[in-house]
Length: 375
Image 1 (cartoon, rainbow, N blue to C red):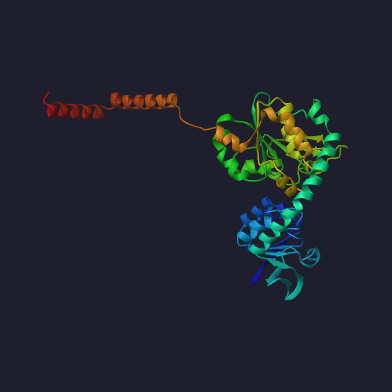
Image 2 (image 1 turned 90 degrees about the vertical axis):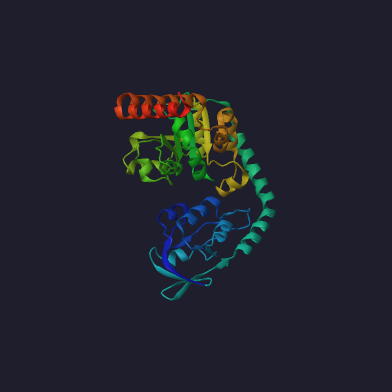
């Protein structure tokens, strides 16, 4: 096995894919690669991925490496963090077997993972899932004891100008199947015109689908400048002590006039759901949000208490995007058909009245019919 290509490096996979081409060799540092990151790498068409960290550590059965190897990508695993000091962005590098070479010299060595090897690692990781579940539950309970006010009390929310009361709100997270679900909901968006809320990179997903986000909520670390400068109101997720690192980027772009910091010990998607609830939304549709243990472990969450509490609070108005697709059908009813038929009849009548040639043709057809039936 031999590959040659331009090295593209980043310790944040979601940032690397934005500048990755199919001819490049991707170098990442991603322990327990998640499914969303793997799908993003596959979408670039890249053929070789070099991971400084273990793509599957055994902590839980993450599916990212399996998606990559089954998708035909060569995955060189566990080459060590030193590669980031030995390879620079734009270097022409070679991958021979399990070796990474720069200028003909080996600079790193890893393990090439085959599909069968990854499948075995995934099976082995399922054994450790019980321990992860125990830790997850303990962290959740601890959070519940500290943050129960999320459920019991009314909350302060940023004073946004976007009118939410009485409307549908679609919260878009760049999570599992977000592109497919967003594409399916196009008729719903066009007809119901919900308030569109993008959680970090979810704002770019809304733009890519041909719409414009009304609000962007998050840390502002994985959303494009285009989305931030597009006119949407910005809710910057801050720490409980008031620090909001994302505001630095907002100020650098000159859009601080549309931004509010919201300090809350919760996830950014939780903030989006709470904002919709506290602002009087009639229905909250969640797209791409995290809903089970594996998804939260993929996200790197140690617990899901904030999401558990938030969903308890907003549950009577919250539906999943897939549920909306099943319940909602943009269809043509009998009244629509009557209007279409009436409109067509009106057009035909107008043509007959206006055009002498059409009237003469119709009269000729009538005369021939009468002669044919003997009238």
